[in-house]
Amino acid sequence: MSLQVDIAMRSEHDNLPWRKKNLPKIVNGYLFGDTIGEGSYGKVKEVLEVSTLVRRAVKIIKAVRLRKIPNGRANVEQELRILRRVHHRNVISLRDVFRDCHRKKLYMVMEYAACSLQQMLDGSDEKKLPVFQAHFFFTQLIEGLSYLHSQGVIHKDIKPGNLLVSLDGTLKISDFGVAELLSHFAKDDWCRIAQGTPKFQPPEIVSGIVEEYRGRKVDIWACGVTLYNLVSGEYPFEGDVIMRLFDNIANQPLKMPQTVTISSDLEALLTRLLEKDPDKRIDICGIRNSIWFKNTFVPVCSFSLYILIFCIFLFFSFIQFVFKRTHRPLSVYAALEQMFCGAMEDSSSLNGEEVTADIPQSDTSASRARRLAASDGSFSNVCNAPGSSSGLTETRRNRSM
Image 1 (cartoon, rainbow, N blue to C red):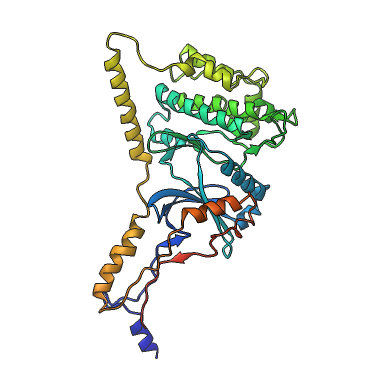
Image 2: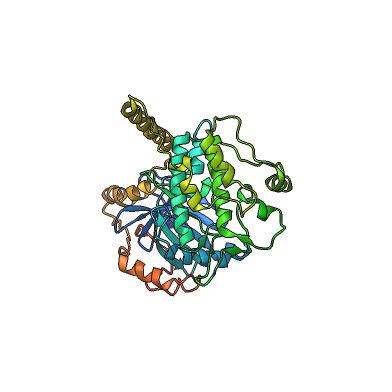
């Protein structure tokens, strides 16, 4: 009997023991690709929507990991509520949400972005962006942040790593894991909980003097640190340990970077963005009215048209250069090739043995809309939403023993 089993487990091609392959994985109409990021809540993977063949990104949140994070479940439920509420070209959009009840995982499907500003900085030799390109992204950041504030959303973790860039150069504010949604009846934007990145925290938080702080002014400070980092590759305040960093943020005077030339208009804006007194710190309206923000970076001279064309050429050349380093190719191509091309090759070489790809029916936009409507922000209700998945569907090879 053991000899017969051994013969059955051997392949007719190479006379080697048969090993289980990593089969393509399809969940709720999404073909899964490689991991493109990982955070405290779980992994982010590239997926291909089967019905439309559009690339998406899915954040996979494990319930087991949530229990180990303070306020983890509440933060995820808050992020779901916020993403269902906001719709703006400079804010990442939520496309679908479903849950695997057996594996206790929540899947948040979002629009796909090519890279983040942090990846663009890391891909640059000087670890910074040209001033005109930093201006291009900063203006979009302010537009997206202005919309969020108008909807009562305080992000509280603005930084280059959370600012994504699409293939057409559109900036997308992402990661609302620590964001706060103000009440419709709130007369102000006072917040109590701070969970942002230490280097982007304002003095009123790191000093620990006040119990409440103005949420919108916290986001403005983080925008100032982000702009400072984009144009210089440095941070306005540093510290080898967390307490030294907090002390420098609270007490050290602001100094402009010495490694790059900063114009007077940009210096004036950075000074107002990084004002230690939140009451004197600039607001969104003031940023839009600043000289540097309204600057179009078009030289005025007799050869202005040629110089403008040259600047545009340099801009898109830089984008192409950075994307060559940071842009990810389609990671699900190997899975598609294995599902369709591999099946045809195997069927012709296994002596008539039938090979099938068990592909589930494509998830419809109507079922996705029902799930989004039913997911009122509760982690448990997503599992009960119409069309939610209760398990993984994989392509399988039928083998006759």
